[in-house]
Amino acid sequence: MYNSSFHIRKPISNNSFSYRMRTGRNLYVPNIVNWIIGDLEIWNKIVFEECDDVWEIISFKWLKNFIKTDIAWVPTYIFDNHNHAFFFWNEAIIEWKIKAWATLVHIDEHSDLAEPSEYLEKNTSLEEVFLYTNSVLNVGNYIKPAINSWIINKLIKVTSEEELDNLLSEIEWEKNDIILNLDIDFFSPWMEYINYDKKKKLIQEVAAKSQLITIATSPFFINQKKAIEVIQDLFWV
Picture 1 (cartoon, rainbow, N blue to C red):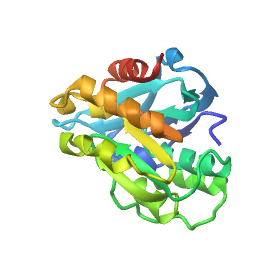
Picture 2: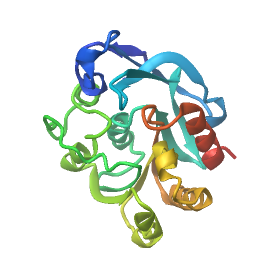
Picture 3: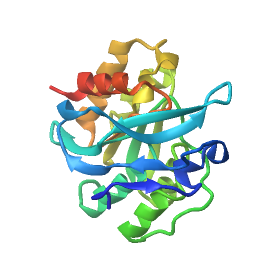
């Protein structure tokens, strides 16, 4: 579904944030390509816009493409805004990369557990999933629809150091397929109270136990040059 890039011009999905205050009022969604993590680089299209603390509009840019790759033979998707994970989870089930009722290990500065305005009916087509992902879902409300759609059976949320400390014990005896859902904003300045090497070690250990990895670079929450550096340091061997 992401074979061609497109723009979101209506006040929907991530384009709804501060829509009336913005002048451009459209966001770019890249197409997906088979690349390696070493090829990540920033491009010049606006993929997220929002007001800062003094109500000025700030524009954020990301990559020319979404990335489909693998990390130690684990299917991996890398993209900007986190709602796209919902589509790639659905696609992975259809392509038999993971089984439904998976365990989601959500490592993120935020819980992303907001309620969407509506839920998708179960057993819908991938085309309908794509439309829902890019019209209803946004960066903060895509996990509950995955639980409602039976993609996710168990959620292990890691948004603090305490939850990070408990992570390995929670997945030690896990029998379901594991999805590592990593938001690179877990390495943002607000999360630097957690030791970098500690985060890196635990994330790599979870990745080794996972059947699918989805990575969001979250342009609004972390500098994208740093986001690329973190991804390459974590996974590019």
